[in-house]
Length: 303
Image (cartoon, rainbow, N blue to C red):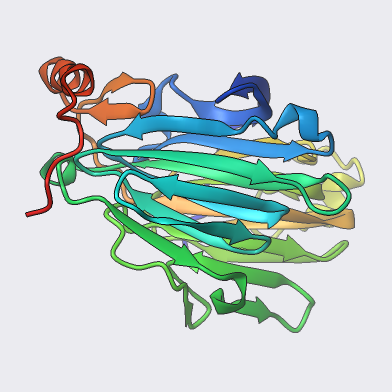
C-alpha cells in the first residue's frame, strides 16, 4: 500500500455568487491543476433565507459538468432544454453542460429556513467539450449507503466503493464522490486509486488526517495526545485537505465524529481557458463561446 501525504490544509472562504447568495468556496479559479479534473467546490450553507433565496438566476455553462448535492432544504432548477424539477434533501444532480446550456438554480430552505448543499464543477476533456448537454437527477433514496461494523457510514454518490456503485453514471472525469461519517474516536482507512487527484472536505465534527511522514505502525491516538509525532492538527468544519499520490488515506475522528466529502478523479492534464461558467481549452474557443452568447447561437441544435 502507498500512503497518501497531505499536500495542503486550507479553510473555505466566504464568497457571494449568483444574485447575492452567501456561500463558502473551498477552491476555485486559482491553480486548477491542483485539483484536476475538478475546478471548483462551493459549500452553500445558511440559516437566513435572505442570504440565499435570490439564488442563481439564468446563466450559461459550456465545457464542464456541475454536481449539486443537497443535504438540507431543496433546489428548484430549470434549463433551456425544457428540463425542470426540484432537488430535495439527500438528492444529487449531475449536469453535463457540454456544448452549452442556460439554466437557473433557486435554493429553498426547510421549514426552519435552513439550506445546505454543495456544488462541484468537473472539467470536460477536449474531446467532449461540445458534447450534447445532459441531466441526471437522483433521488436520495436511490443513493447507496453503507454502514460498517464500527459505525462508519458512507453514501456512494458516484463511483464504486465497498462493493456498492453510485447511481450517477457516464461521467467523463470517472470520479469517486463519497459522503463519509466516521464515529467518535474511530480510526478509519479508505482506499483511493493511486493516480487520481483526491481531497477531503470536512463539514461536520472534526478529525485528524494522517500524514505520510509518521511510521505506518504509529497510532494516531498517541500523536493526538501530544507525543510529538508528525501529524496535522485536527481538521474541523469547512476544512479542505488535499492529498498527494498514493492509494489510501487514514482519518481519526474527534470526540463528535467527523463528516466529510471524499472526492477523487483522474486528471485530464489539458490546457484550460476559463471565463466564469465557461471552461474551454483555448482562448479562441473561449472567445467563440462569448460570441455565441452575444449572437444567440450558444445553444446548439440536437443532432
